[in-house]
Structures are given as structure tokens and as C-alpha cells.
Image (cartoon, protein in one colour):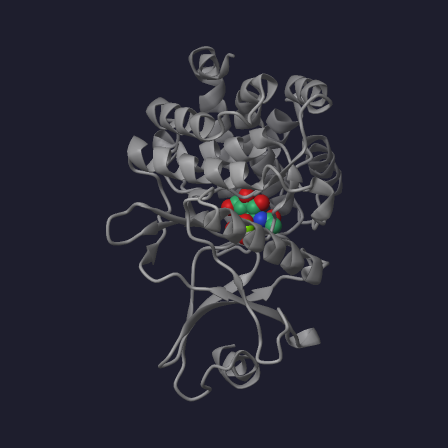
Length: 356
Ligand code: GN1
Ligand code: MG
């Protein structure tokens, strides 16, 4: 792969074929990401998974529009973070389409940037939630219809439940026996689906990030202050409750998303309190009272939905998320569903954070 990139992709972006280093970067489950450096410059290079992003041009156009909008906001002092922008090829295109050999694009690498995989302190949760809040605030005057729906029904819980049910019925890889109790548990969460459908009709539709996990925020490695929000691939219409809920599911546990140390997989209330307060504060004047109340609903929906998605992929034979070992998707699903259960156990106390 590295040799292929060196000879076929780097020249298109004006990088030296001889003097470049190419290293895998980050922990994405879908696209392949590399950090590329030559003597003069650095970029983040990605091979897009076009099985999942079936309209990669639309996805890249969305990201370009959003970064341009954020840059304009930054110039007007209305967005305090740095912006990662697409890097054009030497011929001025935003991508390199090599058909079977991949669909490639490059984005800025920000010097002194650092990511974390697990939130350690309420202060980190506060900073990250504030950064995602600024991001949502800056996008609040974009017209949702100007943004392409790159993965239709991406965060549609009833549809994700239906996909799990089909995977259960097909049991194409004879894995159901290993996870029947978790499948039953997920499919029994019908009350949550009913509540969700009631809320959705009244909530404003916004342009959202849709993948607000902690490693999609860059910290400044010199002082661990907030630097930038990255991974604009799934930016499309959605609800604030999902961006918030995805943050909570990703921030709240002391263990990584695929940890099997379940005794230590739980929702830390102090992290959720810090995230809630700073997210809401950064959206003052924008977030409506109903949206504020909906944040708790999103907090329950997101770990359940990701648990359902991992479980479905496990049953289907790991066709969607990249895995590192055989039961990886099952371990991820159990982890996320354990977080969901921990949130339910603390519901009375935590939901009061979001009352008007
Ligand atoms: C995937 O590829 P990555 O890591 O940015 C997934 C998200 C999940 C996330 C879980 C397009 O994101 O929805 O929340 O894994 N992205 C897509 O870690 O499905
Ligand atoms: Mg992503």
C-alpha cells in the first residue's frame, strides 16, 4: 500500500516520491488514513471507503463547504477554533479517483495537534463539548438543504433496529447463539423508539457533525487546549441531540470503545455534567428549550444505536466496520450496550441536567 501511494498518489498532490514518509494515522473504522511528510510539507491522506461513502464527491464537497463556512466564521471572530481544509491536487481537484485503486483525498495536518482515545478528566470533557458546541453554533446559519445527505438514514434508530432484526433472522455467519441475549435486549427497547419518533417531529433540523467522538477533536499538544474539530465526512442534517449523545457515549466511560474490561465500563456522571454544562453554554441563544430537553434522549439513543450497529455487523460477518480480530464487533457492541445500561441506571439524576 505504501509503495502504491508513493508512486501513484503522492505526485498528484505535489509530494516528493523519493523523500516522503507515509505512516498510518488514527483509529478510524471506515476510511484508511495516512500521515505524509516530505521535506517541505505535511498532509493527511485518506483512501475513502466507497462501499460506505457511495457518493465520495458529494462527501468531499460537503466537507469543503463546511470548512469554508467555518473559515469565514473564524475571520468574523465567530468561531474560535482552527479549521482543517481540503488540499487540492496539482491540477486543482479535491480528490484523485483511481477507480479500483482507490478514491483519494488530502486534508490539512495541523502542527502540534494531538488526539486522545479516552477522556480522563471533566476538564477534557468540558473543552471537547465546548468545541463541538462552537462547531454546531457556527453551522447554525447554514441552510440544511445545501448539504448533501451522504449516508441517508445514517442515524435512524428504527431502521438500525430493523437491520438488526434482519441480521438475526438470516444469521448468515451462525453467530446468533453467541449474542442472542444482546439482540433480544436491543430489540426490546421499543419505548425509546416511540419517544424518539414523538420528539423528532418537533425538533429543528440542523447541519450536524454526526461523529462527535473524542478522537475527532484535536488538542494542542503544547498545553492540551482545544485546537480543531476534524472528520467532516458525516456532516449532514441531523439533530443536536445526536451530536451531544454521541459525545457522551464516547466521553463517559473510563475504558476505550472496544474494551472488554466491563467492570470498568460505565457512565461517569461528573464527565456527563461537565459535557452538558459546556455544550449548552456554548449554544446559548441557538438551542431551543425542546432541543435542550432532547439532549438526554440523544444520550440514550446513541450508545444503543452504535451497539445495534456493531451487533448487526457482527451477525453479518463484519462487512462494515474494520476489525482487528474475530469478535471485535461483538466486544464493541457489548461495551456500548453496557454504557447504555449504566446511563439508564442513573437516569433520574442525569436527566435533570437537561430540564428547561
Ligand atoms: C465510524 O470511521 P470512524 O471511526 O470515523 C462510524 C461512526 C461510528 C464510529 C464508532 C461512517 O467512524 O458512525 O460512531 O465509527 N462512521 C461511519 O467509533 O459509519
Ligand atoms: Mg468518522
